[in-house]
Length: 167
Ligand SMILES: CC(C)(COP(=O)(O)OP(=O)(O)OC[C@H]1O[C@@H](n2cnc3c(N)ncnc32)[C@H](O)[C@@H]1OP(=O)(O)O)[C@@H](O)C(=O)NCCC(=O)NCCS
Image (cartoon, helix red, strand yellow):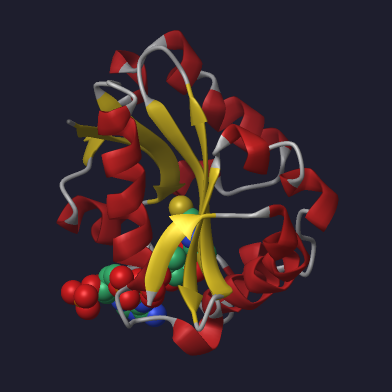
């Protein structure tokens, strides 16, 4: 396995990775997330030249990815996804660690994200990597605004949490 920045030639594979990864939620308390609605390949086209997409590859072919955006206070991890048949082999952890190294290289003080508190491969997974939950009342305005945005997208915000990894 190799972790590297995505190339434009990778983008056709990313929607299928997201779709497959989402199937992890089937039968979980957040089964609605396993919908087939995924970002189209075109979504990633402007992000890749900006160095905002990391991929996990096998024989050069991506099977997992992470999308980030730099803010003044942190590198925000918008999404991490690993194809269902390749999960639980360390790729998710390696992608999040690459994002943390990216944040350090950009001299940003933290990695932030929102996730489900009640899903083993979400909140507990990030906690195991050193992320700490940020109560909404203590979050900065950028982060505090995210739950309302996610509610509008139909996510179960009662079980969403904001997490931060201090670097
Ligand atoms: C989150 C995700 C990217 C992790 O990818 P992965 O390659 O399976 O991650 P890893 O193999 O590095 O596993 C990391 C830890 O997650 C936990 N984990 C992963 N899948 C799990 C599962 N199905 N059930 C329980 N725990 C699980 C394990 O505790 C594992 O820790 P361990 O190494 O001590 O066993 C992957 O599960 C995924 O794509 N899920 C669907 C999309 C998603 O939830 N994205 C995150 C949204 S915030």
